[in-house]
Length: 533
Image (cartoon, rainbow, N blue to C red; front, side, top):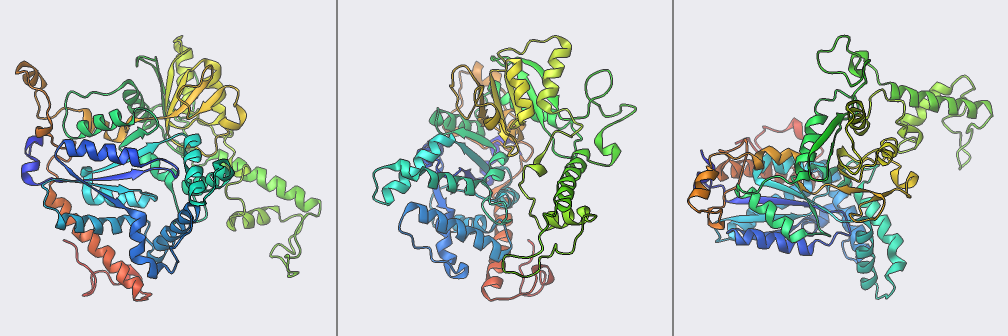
């Protein structure tokens, strides 16, 4: 089936998920997105996921009434986490949205629809929506500087509390933003920091948002004369470079390019080899970490922690009583039990998110950014004034080399919470500021994500030369989705997947409502459980 015949066979719905950290001003973007799709023949419908919680508030058992904006955020964050926990499904809210889509579609007389879901907070929501709608699901991640978000949120809180000085509410805004990014002790809590990097498109809502939105929508709907920006190509190549890594931690890629887009060097995180460079597949001997079957950085962190515990035991700093006077679990451990005490503290998760467990300097791999700089140095290629594209925010060790090498700007996608760049290099690095004078800018990547680069920029079944020779241009009336490796995906397939997924969710919901304690896997396939299509 060709791209030109997709709509004829019924691919009429596009589902758009939005990911936006709290404090991002969503309204202008939603309006721009709706206008872009409307211009191309799609009726747009917005679905607010937080609003759908009102349908299940009795199940959640939380009062969703609020007196001000801060209370509203607090109540709905708790309600979302509670609902996901009750169902044991991270995608619970997105499945409520699927139900809303089905209802809106049944009531519409329009031929084509763009359903805008605002906004997603958990990675499982993205996974489920991609499983249901395939490439007809688009995830937009909206970047806004932390400064702008804090100010915007503080102003909203201030107005709803009938106050005039919004600066009084800056700490409140900061607390909500941190909580929204990651609720570390709750698997079903807010996980915006983990959802954000999963996007198909990244938009900077503070700069050039409307133009960027129109471009990306036209690109998805078949404008074959839209080509990659220098940043999109740089980040795609960094992403491809990351796939070379066999690191036991994560795959990271980096590209250094001139400001006009010419690639200077690439790097990935991998173990260095004698003679320069990094190990490749097929090298003999092969000294990569997986060949050693251990992770030395984790081992060294554990050794350091045991040393600290040993010193505490030796000095008598061991707990014998709880605050209520009862005997503590550690009572009875002696100076020879440092390993046991350390293991107990780790098992009880007392060490989660501590600096000592976040140490990174004992890893054997050269980091991707440093590997790129070393590659340039070995070949005598100048990087002064260049841009660096990294799939992950650089660590503080890489940052010092980036600054020293004269890199002008760094683009990244995934966050890296362990990085101390902001604390260690405030004199030479600015984060999220595009124009920041004589310092190095670390800014979020914007544009087409590497995961959709090939689908959207590879031209299939279209002769651009003929279009130009016949003085034809891409026009809204010939807009067709570009589905890449899924050219035969149809509305019939999407709706069958949608129906099956929603019926399963609805059954889960009814099971929880009825108070049944039966495990889902024990009854799927019974007369009461939904069957597969």
